[in-house]
Image (cartoon, rainbow, N blue to C red; front, side, top):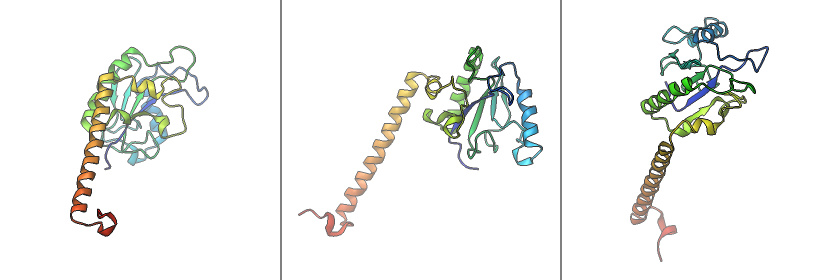
Length: 196
């Protein structure tokens, strides 16, 4: 299995006959029933938990979190990202009328789940993204921008990650500089880099 690199956020969205249908009343069982039809028993898409749901986790409008797959299970929530984690927030966040945003209960459940998964799999904030990043879709809804997603994290957490990224880059540059100095000292570059 490849490394888990991303946490990809989704919404339940509308229904085939109405893109703006309010799906906030749906439960995990509704998602599972629909995904059973899509998978049609194809074993490679059935999770270790015996479920067909594409997402690793589903959070209903009341804030209940259901794990549909082990983190290491192959998933099918995002094309070509089968090893990454998918979290579906039940609801349609492309609506113009209410409800058009996740509930407070969903956000309250999502934040610690994200933190736990990011720590467990060493996933940076930059890699917590909406489905739209990998596919031509509005998912997780026109009302949930990438800025909204990053806003789930405290400013201090974002600053700390930026600091770590900068330190990592600085470490790499220092390693490269040390290597270049050693190569110059050993004259591995030949006459091209010899000082005159």
